[in-house]
Image 1 (cartoon, helix red, strand yellow):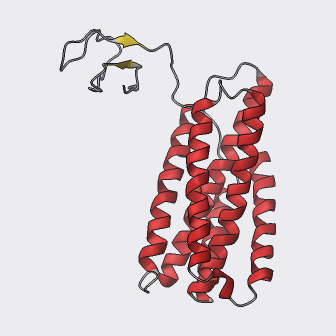
Image 2 (tube, rainbow, N blue to C red):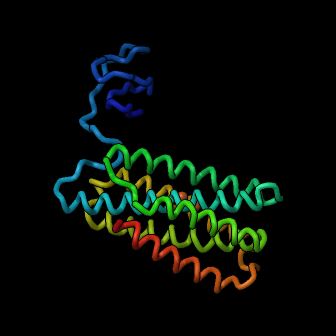
Length: 221
Ligand SMILES: [Fe+2]
Ligand SMILES: [Fe+2]
């Protein structure tokens, strides 16, 4: 069964475009009305929950935005190399992640971080500069960033599970799915010689320190 934007659905998953229609336009089956008026995040119960949710969504959006800019920077340097299609594949997934968070932010009227213009440049420069070290440098950057994002998503999953897994079930599903993609990207980086990058451990630690700082500030402003 498929839930439509207006919460009306038939068991054959035929889309229905108006909440005023009481039966499916294709099969004439009477429609059930979902009591849900939101797609992923429930309307906040109080100001505390609103604040928590805005922080979570703002930082996740910033992370996906930054990831997109990193892959854009990598592609600018390595796009026409043998590694190009692999980077493009990961970038395509990041585009979907960002699109989803754009949607969720709009639906819940969450302001994105004011640092977006900064992450725009910083992400691109990080992606391009590590790619200038070669394919291994780009992959080392991917391993560092994706490990940080996966850990960040895991800590959010823990928080939401402790608070109310039932209430946040849809958001948890989104975060878990994206976390799995990020872990795949991380593993792809390792499989493609990240560890052979010049100064791998130094590079990885420096990038992860940057990610920690980025997460800290993007939650708050
Ligand atoms: Fe992502
Ligand atoms: Fe990723």
